[in-house]
Image (cartoon, rainbow, N blue to C red; front, top):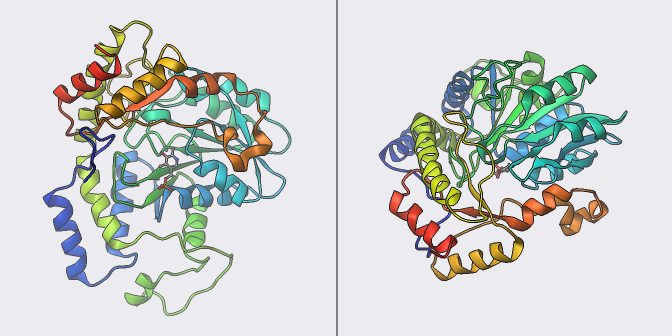
Length: 382
Ligand SMILES: *Cc1c(COP(=O)(O)O)cnc(C)c1O
């Protein structure tokens, strides 16, 4: 589909997805119904959480998560400035103020628990962390900090579907799944994610009250959905709270189930490719990769390299473009976006250093080892 010789990402779509889409068309039920229910059940099983609520996007899911955390006007939400802009936008949409904390280090570009501790104040209502590239944040420390003060911990787990926690300290069980550690976890099924449906998202929760409220707010605040009425389970409905239409539909849910069945295998392929990249980059002068190799635990969402300096990064971007190899930047610092002008002077030295030197390279399950070599040859000007 793309004009690139090697694209940044590529879907793993085939017969299973075609069959799933045709099954929905044949059923003649398109809006939220049995496929959505099955997708939610299977996703919850994979994460070992009691509740998974499918929604139209992760952005919608983040909005819902902030709302059920009772985040509103005059509240503050601590979060990294190194993230996709959705969490910050939804913080503002809920009436609250984002407070940006710095990352641990360029080698560990996730929100620093010490920053959270420093930034927590009487107005702090929630903390949103983001598991960069599918590598988990320091969740034991962060969960303890939030738990002690009754602050809701939301995981933006969009990079981390299928990733596990592991820090060797034993404070959280090894194997706790990304998204299932905090109070609420949010996932995206946008086209370039590890589990892709085009658009779509999921919010997971352990507490039944949170899940019930998420379901209400997802569908206009209504006590029943049209699938219930179709099945004769309900003939009318109440509207106890104002809500939204953030539902997922049957086609996307069916695609999601087909993709979920491939997730473990595809994440393993991504990790194997990351290891090939790691070997090449470790041998190059001045270049590095963030995060230690986390073995089986990462989701392998992004292949990110760190250049020795900004000028060399910019030259590498240019070399890759000339070789028709797509690269990207995850992410610009949110405080530098025009509409976040009020945060321009936030002190984020490590984030800004990381953003100046980082480059995202092609990574997708069907990528060949030869392509990894080719990308590295061009990146490192070998
Ligand atoms: C993709 C992404 C989002 C937004 O997801 P949508 O489903 O497109 O709304 C939010 N946060 C992160 C970290 C993402 O990668």
